[in-house]
Image 1 (spheres, protein in one colour):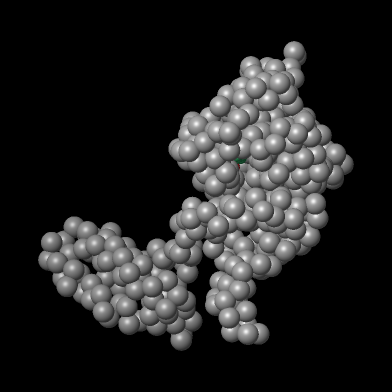
Image 2: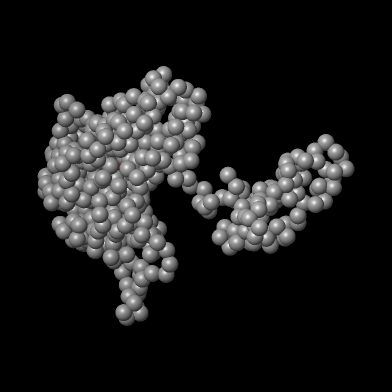
Length: 460
Ligand SMILES: *Cc1c(COP(=O)(O)O)cnc(C)c1O
C-alpha cells in the first residue's frame, strides 16, 4: 500500500519499474538520474519524516531506495516514493501483538498489558515531573511518594512500601540488607527455579548471604527452622512455589509460627496479589501474608497485579527502611515511568490481567461462537492458564476457534500479528486475552491466514 501523499494535481508521482532494463546505455543514463540524498531529504514528505523519525532512519531508507534504483529495480523517479513507503510507522521495533493463547500472564509477550489508566500515567510522567521534588517548597522530596502511598493505602496492614526493578531485585535487596555475610534459612521445599534456568538459591547466594536449608522437599516442621536459628541468622525466607505443586505427604510451616522464631520473616509471594482472590485460592497475597506474621513481603508488579515490571516490598517500617537505606537499593531503583504506571494500576480500574482472569464465561463463549460461525470453523472447549509462573495447576476453562496448525505462522506474521496456541496439531484461537473491541481484527487476521494457508473454510 502506498503511503506517499499526492501532489497538488492529485497525481501520485511514479515511474515505471524496470522500464529501461536490458539497455546498457539507458540503465547508466537512469543511474545518473537517481536523485541525490540531500535533494530527496529536502522533499516535503521526507523532510517531515525527518522531524518525526529522525534523520538517520530516513536517510537509511533513502540510501536503500537509491541502491535499488542503481540495481535497476526502481526507476529514478520512484526512489522518493519507495524510500517513503519503506519508513517505519513507529520508532520502537517492538511489535504489538494480539494474545490469542489464552495464557494471561505471558512472559514472552511482556507479561501484563497495562490498563488505559496506566498508559495515560506513562504519558504524564514522560516529561519533567515532581518525582523527587516538592514543587511547593522547591526542596527535594521522597522519590515516588505517591506510588508508595497508593501501595500502603491498598494494603493498610503494611507500615511501609518500597518499589524496585522487579521481583528478583526485591528478593536480592531483602536478603542482602538483612543477611549479607550471615544466613538465610529456607525450607528445602521452597528452593525454586523461577524460569529460564534462574534459581532462587543461586540468586540469594550471589548476595553474599549463606543459604541454610532446612527440612525436606515435601515436609518441613517448625523445629527444623528452630534448630537452625542462631546468632548467624539474618532472616527466615519463605518462598511461594509459584510454578509447581507438591502433593501428597506434605507439610510446611505457616508465617504465624515462623514469626515466633525471632528473626525477620521475608515472604516472597511472587505474583503480586495485594488481596486474596477467590478464583486463585492457593495464591498468597500481601495483606494475608503480612497479617499472618511476615515481616515483609516481596512481589512482582507485572504478574497478577497487572502493572509494569517492578518489585514491590511491603511490611514493617523499620525493616523496609533497612532495605531502602542499603546502597544496593540505589542500583535497583525504578524510573518515573514505572512509578507512574504502578500508581495508576494500584489506584485505578481493574487492569486487563484481572479482567481476563475473571472473564465472564458466557460472553467469552458467545464471542468465540460468533467468530467460529463467521469463519465456518469449529469451536473447541479449551483450558487457558494464568501463566507467568502463577497458579500452577489452575485451569481457566474457556473456548477456542480451531484452525489448521499451519495457520499459526501466518497469524503471527499478519497485520496485526496474532499469537495463537498450537496444541496437538491444531491452531487454537482463544479470545480470553483479546480485548473484545479487537475481535474483528482477529477475525480478519484469521481469514487472511486461512486464505494464504489455502485451506477450505469448512471442516478440514
Ligand atoms: C516471578 C517470581 C519471582 C521473580 O519476579 P520477577 O518480577 O520476575 O523478577 C520471584 N519469586 C517468585 C515466587 C516468583 O513467582
